[in-house]
Length: 139
Image (tube, rainbow, N blue to C red; front, top):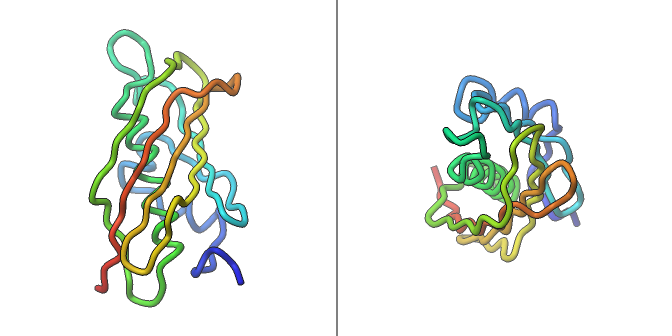
């Protein structure tokens, strides 16, 4: 039995991310593993703060995007997922290139989910650890 309840492709995930914040900041889903989701985000004028560092809020956008999408992939039928709490611990700055997020479930229950998202710089250094709690709702 697959961890994911919905079937999709990276092309479909990325196509669905256009025309909203996800596409605006350049987030691209790059890997859909057996029990994890990966995405990248550029460190550029869309995602940095005035001092040239990756904005902490941009890291949170990447984390919530990944956790929400992973949560949706663990729902079924007419269900959808909404974020109810997120936190982020920023450990290292990024100034250029891109960052890579890796999202894994800490809990993927029928009504609540907890996701851990780790964000790495291009050298593999851990920049941020975020935890997102989502709620599964029926539409």
